[in-house]
Length: 525
Image (cartoon, rainbow, N blue to C red; front, side):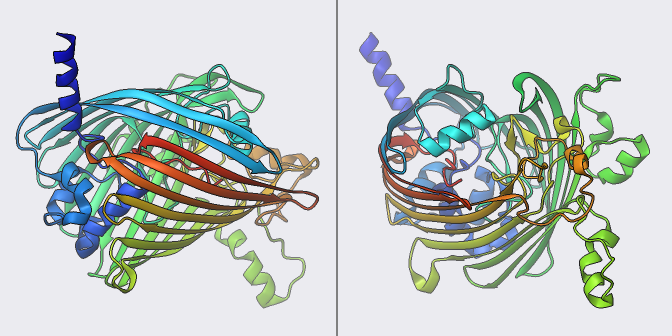
């Protein structure tokens, strides 16, 4: 009898897929999807992720032999089904360089999914994990009190994660998603709008696709430490509403607009909960915020994507946290007028920039993609005078993993012939940190009011403070063992160097393991 049940479970698992309803937010998987969408990229609005099964089905033909994974994932399931699939991850490593270390990362869990006639999908999965991290990553975990991308670390090395997704296609134009997970807005490897770096959060998302427009509204419930960095607990609830509009102006040029508002659930005056003033999916937040006399944290962003040739994409994002034109243009005005008394470097000039290019199958090289981008985030960006309203969740940035006050260069090359997976990730970042004199605006979790301690209204600049340069070179080679689980055997070589004015530390990391690759694992920090 037990053997019979085991055979049934294995059969259900092998017929399953890693997630039901949407494509996993994992780099290799996303690149596979971009290969499929190459002919219809402008129509699909690929900056809104995760992609739904319906998006891929609508814009792609039957996959060829090099895209077996996508065939497994996106063949139309017109029948009702239930699937069971495991979550597996075992990785061991040796670390050399300035510090020697050995460790292991293990993850185990189970996912149950169902689909009803390619109209409704439900996926529920739970995981528990244990990790003895590389030395630099352990410092990041200690500083945040969380395992990045997962949640709070328990008993120094244990962590867990719950993911839930319900997806419903109401009509040709409307798709709805609800559950506990992550979202991403952008064409690049990073995003200055919304990334998948932080832990899972509860959300409700609606996508509307009409004519040349795709519009997304996202309602989210998040959590934040009450007295970071002094204490990680207690946790308090906060909420966010985000809108993103993508418009195709021509076949080769599209533009986008992003806005977000973050507010705490309860303050010293009242318990607000979810503020229904921000429920309207088609309204701009600034007029509402001013009308309420609110001090909630609002962000506004713009994006542009140009596709000058087949497979080539030029993309950019520009985000405004706060903006005063007179202060923003003061440097230019000082140069033009020659007035040395003009004050520059206003602390509330809080902006983020991204500029990048990617090339899919360059020069006809099948299954290859290349990406290069630059990310710039000014001091104090994403922060707020009330740190519980900062643009963070569970102590992790909702946008770029490095927070603020940095400049970063990223290059990613990915090649996926058949079941093989090869990638080279290289990053170089310069970030300014606080010193003994003042807070330099590098951490959105710290109140923006900190700048007032020494009256630094002006004189602020990018990478101000104690500068730290970090370079990463990470090579990944993998082989997909079970397509329907996206189960891969992987080998990793990672070289990291960290340089300050007085000291240089380096690390070389060799890892080997096996895992169900259904989420991004950002280690190049």
